[in-house]
Image 1 (cartoon, rainbow, N blue to C red):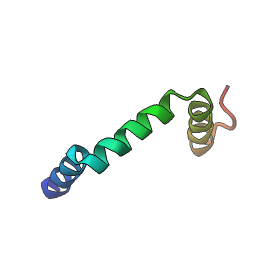
Image 2: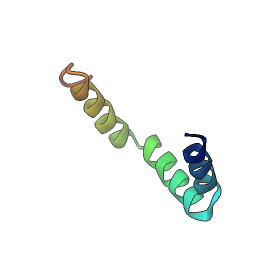
Image 3: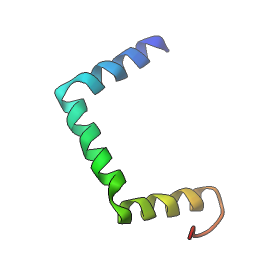
Length: 51
């Protein structure tokens, strides 16, 4: 399992990993994206639509 963690860490330090990290951080700050994620998690947990 340590090999997998090492590979993930190396990827996150690569230029592509840094770009992807920035893209995810920007998406996380977007209110519409946060709402969609909250709704998806609530539905997955079986609680219907989150408010």
